[in-house]
Length: 374
Image 1: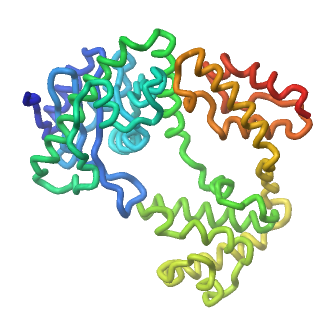
Image 2: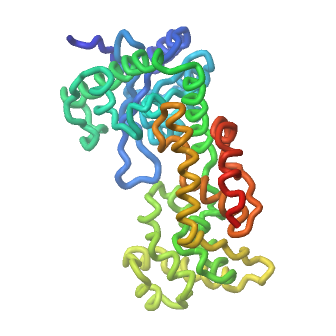
Image 3: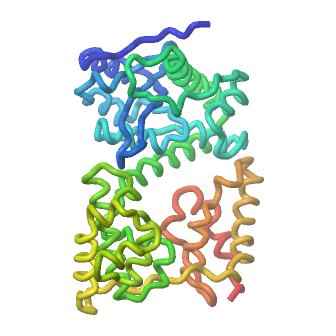
């Protein structure tokens, strides 16, 4: 059956529709974008489903996004998305707003123990019994006109996402509905916590092996790389490849010839930014000791694997009781943060990253599991 479709090609039409959508209990949202040689995604199409028809919004024709921003922020309208981390970036860049409340159908599937991290097509097939055509995600969504295949793909995305929501929602208990929305709010909060360029060095692989003076160089290089990627709208690795950061900070080359020999150093980077990198290294290495970063903590030793297994078992046990996909319960980073508060001899404290219902349901059980392990 053909799905009723409306194109949205001007600001006034979008504003009228957004006002109408704010009277609905929910809207389903999806985006198509391009992100090949850019730091930020380029919006190519927005799809909205309201359960009756699909709307295709052409961002190349829209200049006023205030109506959509108001809809995204309207707490009375649930915004339904699927595996939405990149969609959130697109919406944030376009409108300066993010969806609240946010219902992610991929998360909902996990809370119903249908599956963890399920792709959209598989979830539609599992829940709605529909076989979707192979995706157009790799096609050029910025081309105009879009092909009939692209349009059909986009329309079906919006329509079936609305149908998914209507099928999944009644199967969720009130408690699980609240948890899906809580996790959605966490996704939004994580996106709003933009990486501080001066803290980017902490995420570089093997950074903990460097001495404080070397860390000062790594901090300067990583911060420059992050700021330049944003300013140039280029991927970070286009500005300076990540595998080059650690050897640059460790060996601190003093001339272009030595710089060019650094692992994975692209010749383009040497030509374009070589002198800048050398100056960054010189300046950071000359900082007084009082301005060096503190040493970074070492990773947990291999002997911790048995403890991690014991902590994961707490989550698996709770997942069985609640009939939830076990992968949703406790992230490895959270468990590692817990262990780092007291390893090896304790006492342990729950990390800030263990929040909400997970802290309430499993916090004490995790501490109990560690008791007596010192």
